[in-house]
Image (cartoon, rainbow, N blue to C red; front, side):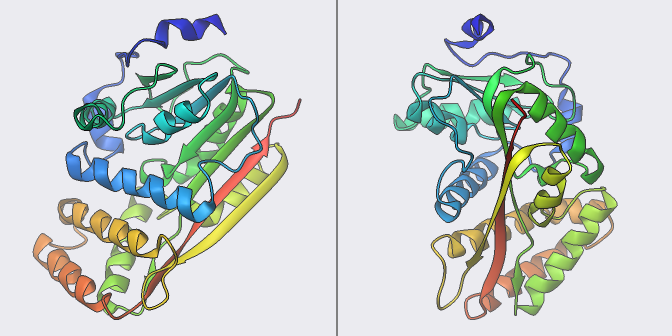
Amino acid sequence: MRWFSRFRQRPARQNASVTRARQQRDYVLGAGEAEISRLDLQHCIFRWELGDDFLAPVTNPRAILDVACGTGRWAREVARRFPQANIIGFDINYEQIERSLAEGAARGSDLMPKNCTFVAGDALQRFAFAEGAFDLAMARATSAFMPASRYPELIAEMTRVARPGGWIELRDFGLVRSGSRALTELTELFKNLMAARGQYPGAGPYLAELIARAGLRAIQVKTVTVRSGSQPSRGGRMMLADYLALMERLSPIMERAGLASQVHWQQLLEVARQETTSQSAEGELTAAYGQREA
């Protein structure tokens, strides 16, 4: 595992062929403070509602890979949990990682662990890591950029870089449902946008089937329902806040796609915020994991 040594000191830019144009095309929500906060909120929802940062039965790992790592929050926290392991995260949106690290350093509460490294990389391409290098390969909320047709390739690459007997795990959301008329209309328009882009509108409901086709063993799937309203689950209110924040950030994208003007979209959002103060909302979170053959 000596190939990890060059990544040990600080985040480093790698893979110069990963261009900003490709980043903006595939992940259209940007790298600003609001998006960093939203992704960190998703991290907390997954952890609290699913019960842990991962469910695969990994013990005493030597190396863990965070695929399309977003802000890098998950990788940093896992690195603190396993100080003996090398944790690597990669994402096409490297600016987002840098901003998140800068914010953590400024607070003094989320500093970079020495055993954690981030590199620029494209989850839609062959991973720049050796076969069998990791005890666990994790990917969360990849439906934000992953074409539905490319999931078999993603899972195959995660399996390739897992060691024999190692684990891969995927986590994702399902769509939010509510008695709110406005939120239902927003969701239907969002589904149309994702269909036009060839993507799942939240891959959670599809993970069980996708991972079952991948040739893994010991497959397990866990789905939990989160709710807001009068009897919310622990992450229910945060789930609704995350979903409404996502809808807010989609406003100009919806207009460019010809699905809704920004004026109409913002009107729907305002009504949805009002209606969901009295109307409950719910959705599912799914984690699916399996083991590479030994």
